Image (tube, rainbow, N blue to C red):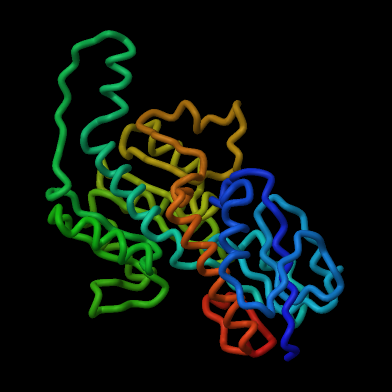
Length: 312
């Protein structure tokens, strides 16, 4: 490996739906923290070895013949994984947005328990309307796709006394996490299901009509993983029946077209894929990029490798 590293970091035009910092703040912080042998460029060059693409900014990776590493600013990698050339290592920003996402989940749970939307609707209609509200300590939460974000959520919920159980690809009995194929008992137990699944061929529409039917009546479904992990129309049917409620930060399709029936589904609160999009998570993502670039410049093993045939 040569001592000199050219890193291509295009400037995002604005804050995108995956939480990439807008303007020059993130890139400037990166530039100020790099080793002397790393050169940052904002245009493609033939000697680029390390690239940091932003969602929505087109990069022709095939036009970078010296490219060795693609480092993302998002935890989700499904939008990039099929575009990475053979022999190039792809890394994500897993962990950088865990705190922001966990906080959003706590906010979603509280908003539902404290009936934020019905009270707002009553206020808009000038109706003095009493509704039953509930406590986090009485809520049983299941986390689908339990990993680092799920553990952070458990940490934030612990002071409230909220019981949490996890569902993952593989069982982890010491953490109270069951395998996906054994999820039935946990789904029947919970009052709220939080979906943190990444999008893979195995997880696409895994939350289908049968899966949703395993949840108890009056359960809450929260999704901030990826929209296509859920069968949207199966969820709409449950919402229309009034059997489930939902808080969604991700949907399928995105952006949601104005005419889509999900907009008018009862019992739903919706945000436009912003759960991980906070100043703190942006800073953490750029710090991770700086650390990865420093590792690469020193010839050390990279972290958060999603796919690689190059030995990093």
